[in-house]
Length: 216
Image 1 (cartoon, one colour):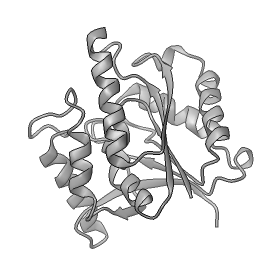
Image 2 (spheres, rainbow, N blue to C red):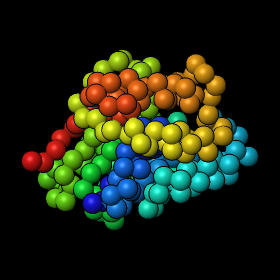
Image 3 (spheres, helix red, strand yellow):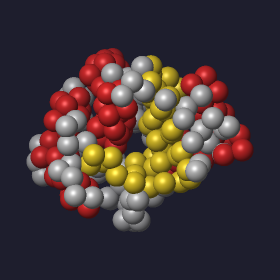
Image 4 (cartoon, helix red, strand yellow):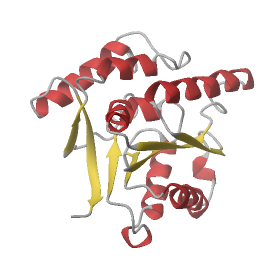
């Protein structure tokens, strides 16, 4: 199976889908990441760009990602671009990958880039335009999803009990993004969220998703 994770910024992919990526790779699935921005401009000065890019590659290697598709769109300024332009970028990646499953940002995250990519992602993953695609799921990103309007109501859970610590190790490769507790992006908080999601479905740790659509 081929999997595509659409992420706005370096670290979104591991925070939201890291354990699930490891699950996919464990059964031999190809996992691609569409990285929409470099996560640097507007937040860090140019000297940090190389560090963040290196962290992205190291994290991808740790997770076993098949390929990163870097779109290099403007960080924290996606709302200044025509939505169709972003959708077309994503459509080109989808055409290249032919994914069976797509993971996409939640629609009500507090980060505006996430909201824009959600809307563009819906356009790019229209069922009639993606004949190979079997399912589209929304994922949560700590410090962005719970800080939104709290509408994230997962209906699909992936058991990541065996992958949780490796997910946290992968996230720790993002030296600029790792925070001390009680920040939502601390190892303690990431572990706690996975435990809470897991308890919903009687496993020790899980990642949770909202189904956009799924073919029978």
